[in-house]
Structures are given as structure tokens and as C-alpha cells.
Length: 228
Image 1 (cartoon, rainbow, N blue to C red):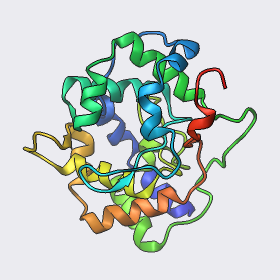
Image 2 (cartoon, rainbow, N blue to C red):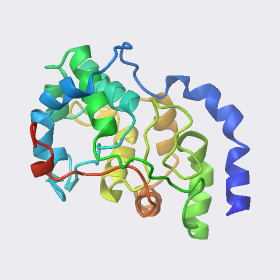
Image 3 (tube, rainbow, N blue to C red):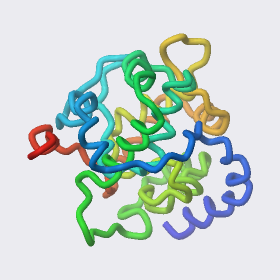
Image 4 (cartoon, rainbow, N blue to C red):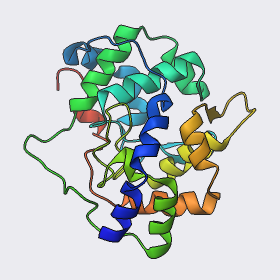
């Protein structure tokens, strides 16, 4: 594993320069956790049901967002609102939100389900297969998402350890998609990285990353309601 990480970390300097354009940046607005809790009703129907599966553009589990970075959440919502990310449901929701709403929801979800004092290993808890290690090295994945895939080098990048494998695969495929009015993610860096891989290779990487321990959770809806 040391050789694997050493090879990828060697790419960090060149990668970080490009990553300035990684995601759309929402205007910096301070989020309020309690306010976000009162605005989360529109989110729990997908993100508050364990095992809930979306059906567009294909069947996959809705992503775990409890415990995700607040900056990444707010940037993602802003990207949907601006049309930089395409998904009919998420675009519809995001365009109904103000920047303050986005910041509040992001603040709420970033601490939702987080266990005080819990810690994760500094490096990935288990080694990938040789084939997957080569793919991760090719994509320089840890140079952004961290050696354990749960501690990104910048909070605007997502935690991905433990995320649903099918969601990760769909997200990577979206970065490869061009010219589709309803599907796709406009991001020069991730687009360039994703286009290096076949769908089968992306699925293999996603399967490994999803198997790692991380902060991300889907908290059951019954525990998600205001006042519970």
C-alpha cells in the first residue's frame, strides 16, 4: 500500500493546480444548523430512507449526505441551480433555494449523524486489488480525496469513502456525459479524469471506495424529523 500511495502522492503538486476549478462555488454564506433542520423536509424523501433507490438516469441508491462536507453540499446545490449539474429533480429543488437555504441545509447535513469522538484511519483501511490500485493511481484519486478517501484536501471536494458504489459509478459517468439536456456534470478536471476510464473500470473503483469506512450515512427518516 505504501508504494501505491507514494506513486499517487507524487502527482499531487500538478493535480492541485488544476483543482481550483473542481466545483462551482456558492457564495460564502454562513449556514445555521437549526434553520437547516427546518428546511430538510424536501430532502428526506430520498436521502433519509435507507436503501432508497433513484430511477433516473438509471437505478442506483440515493447518495449518503449526512456527514458530508458542508462546503461540498452547498457547492453541489449551487451547481444544480446554475445548470452545471443536470438532474431534473435536483435542479428543480435547487432552483427553489436561496443561497442562505443552501448554506443552512449544508450546515445541518454536515453534522447530522456524526458521532462525537469517532475517528477514521489516516490511510485506507484495506488495500485495493492490484488492478484497482492501478486505476486509482491513474486517476490520482487520493491527491484530492485523501489517503483514506474520507478526508479531502479541501472541503469543497467530497468525502467518498463508504458512499454507495452504484451512486459513485453514476456520478463518474455523469462527468463523461456531454450534450445531454438532462444528464451530466460540467467540470473540467473531473471530466478529464472520468474520460480516462471505461464504465467497468469506474465500477471497480467505486466498489473498492464504497467498502471503506467513512463518515457518510443515511439516517433513517424517523430520526430525521424536526422535533424527534
